[in-house]
Image (cartoon, rainbow, N blue to C red; front, side, top):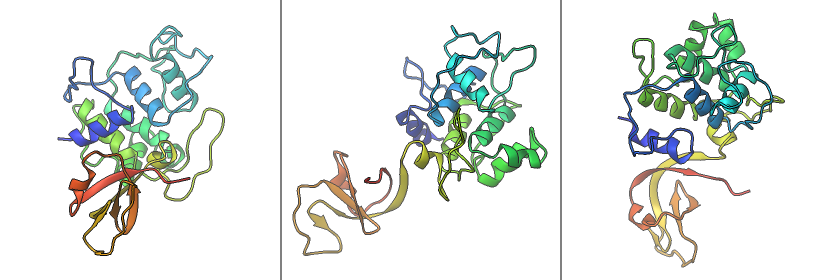
Length: 238
């Protein structure tokens, strides 16, 4: 079960369920849908004037995502200027797209290219942890796990339609694209109450303290977290 990972992706608007409230974890995702997911993971500026594939014209709902991913070298067609947008994305194709999105395309090619080189890089980055293949395909639940894992993998470069941007050491998609960071620890202090400091002074700021660092919060029940080990996602003050 990876309900937490699926929820996290929905918060970031990377991957969502269906309008009827279902997610269908055992279902599959089309090649067009996965291109859309990849574009959202990279926060691509999906404005394109090209028309690479005859079966993904400018009227197609995923046209801009497919074309932008193609422009970056993340996806390929199947020949004869066709992309087959409604076909299910394969396990190997999904891995190739994500590894390329993380900036490891050249490294994967050095290890033999598609699919073995991309799989080798994916295993080394641990983005396939808890991800299973399903007879050459990949279920929605496993795609969610793959995408979630990839948010925390170290980037080789950040891809952009016009240029490659320099990155800092240990930069991830989560930090570079979404400007979010993850921390974990015991909540030792909340506004006005501390487990370690009896002389705490009052403040109007709503916060929790983890690993001796204060994090402002708007979580309604944040006081109930005192003494618990929690995982948090935060943005740094600029």
